[in-house]
Length: 209
Length: 251
Image (cartoon, rainbow over all chains, first blue to last red; front, side, top):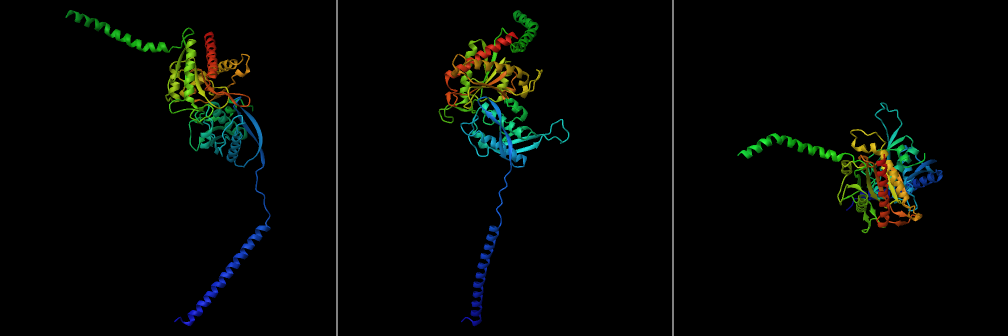
């Protein structure tokens, strides 16, 4: 036989738990309403968009085997490495499509990263020089899908080097990686083991300054 | 045995001299053969068919990647063999870096060409990209010839001559289509780039890349595997080398 005081205790505790549940539900609803009210009352802020800047692309032309400057407006981030990557991805997207003068198959993010490092020459003993070497890390998919040929691969490499120099004049030399590793050639022809001098790249392809 | 003794005494006196003479012959003969040929001797041309072995190069033809597409290594070897026949008929001595489907690295190709002290070296490529013939000369800065040249920049001493050779080939290819028919014109470009094999060659060297012929809309009118198109280009190359030889002889 259950004692009477236990029955009363059980009923009191049950009533208390029901009351607490009701209070918690009500508190949750009030908190939700308060959050909604706060969100609705705040003004919508526009996403931050970088201002448009003039960018010079050194566009390759297979017919004449030259690079031609083309100026476009492009929103660019402040970080120089991110700027370089954005400019190069924009340059390579220029080549997608059969109508291009230097047709390449489309690849998402062909340039995975660009690293800008101080260029220290043997004749300089201090780090005052602002000259930079750019390490351009191309995606494996981009290299694998690039058309194979001496001229087309060379123009791609020179186009990247000259475009970097046109927009970041402190970049004097360029080296290339594919998928984060050094590769002998882009796709069987253009030598990627060498350091490309950006000024020489423009001259070699007959580009106009 | 007086006869044997006579031979022994003769051998003791003449033997060392004969041995020295034979040895001197072995040492001097290769040197004499390695002398640069005069205008009266055969002009030596090196033909380097790019790729080979497991290195297929580009897939050429209408549908790259399909089974019918020809690998670049096959096309360059065929071009090399056809050009060899044309040049031999014109009195050139021709050396091919490879005569079959063998893999060769860039150093081996440069070694083969430097050994024969050629007057001109042509590196043959083929591609589906672009149009006409693409000529490339090393982008090394010119340097005066030294007794010992660094291996990776040996071409620097010949860059000026390589540019002259490139211009001669450019002129010959441009003239190849001027017989009244503009459709026969072979568009030709001349550029400079870094090429590990050529940069180590000590001869005037030009990379010749054969690309399809296209009309103004970019449609292919002659594939690189087209025998007639190849013949026109190879005849122009042979004419350019004849001109090159005559200029070298005059100089």
